[in-house]
Image 1 (cartoon, helix red, strand yellow):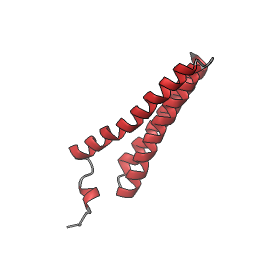
Image 2 (tube, helix red, strand yellow):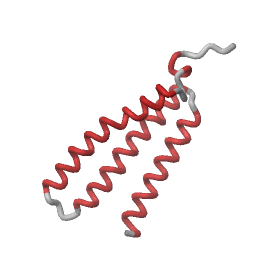
Image 3 (tube, one colour):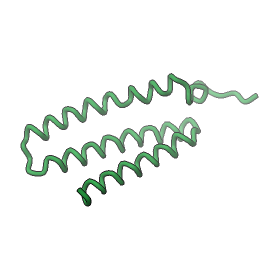
Image 4 (cartoon, helix red, strand yellow):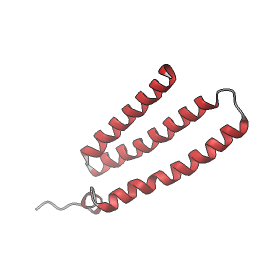
Length: 99
């Protein structure tokens, strides 16, 4: 039987899902302050600042989970992190060039 450390033993458990959910809280709070600043400043292209800020915060969160997946040896987390970044970049590209 292979002995796993605590981080590997908890991978994929409800606690892991809770950690993922609560890791979004600081990003959400920071993004809320960012939006208030951008909207209060009455910038000409405020929608672009908000779009890039949302993409940057989401990519930062995905990067955190990619690193966590590498550390824990959890390949699905790494793959999903890279897929998430690809989706975020695709949505941002679509917003900038097609809308």
